[in-house]
Amino acid sequence: MEKKMLSVLISICLICFPFLFRGSMMKQNLIVFFSKGVVSTLVDTYVVSEKRVAYPIRPFPGVFRTNIIFDMLFFPLLSVIWVKQTYNDGLWTILLKSLTWSVPMSITQWFLVKYTRLIQWKKWSPFHTFGSVSFTLFIIRGLVSVVKRLDQAKSTQY
Image (cartoon, rainbow, N blue to C red):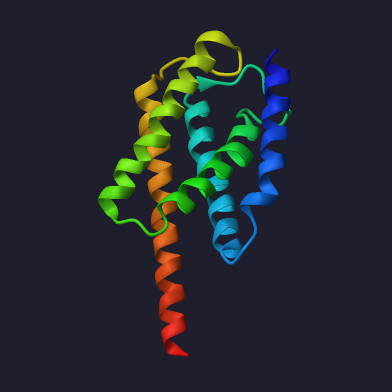
């Protein structure tokens, strides 16, 4: 069942991919996608190496100890959507909207831990998930703000 779930997740991500990466914000979306992939992979690699979380069923288990579908495809795509959702918002609105992502992600991960073998928590809880998802979202959103300001400064020079 778990491998089927991962296949469905890959399919959904691949179907959504072209719709998220079109238009004038393509450069920014690619920066968000690849940055989130790097940040998620680094955080997850640390957490797995500390034996707080394990992924018993994952692609390429001989190569990766983390679930690369989550780290390099699913979470980055969700971050692209989140950045689009918060692009013109102020700090407080961004903080409130982050709850619409980190709370469901924590609940979903808890569900996956409880009812599947995709994720196994050892020294972890939904609160850790909430904190790590929020942390990575804010890092990526901060990066977007920097890129946005650099683009504005560049356009005012010309």
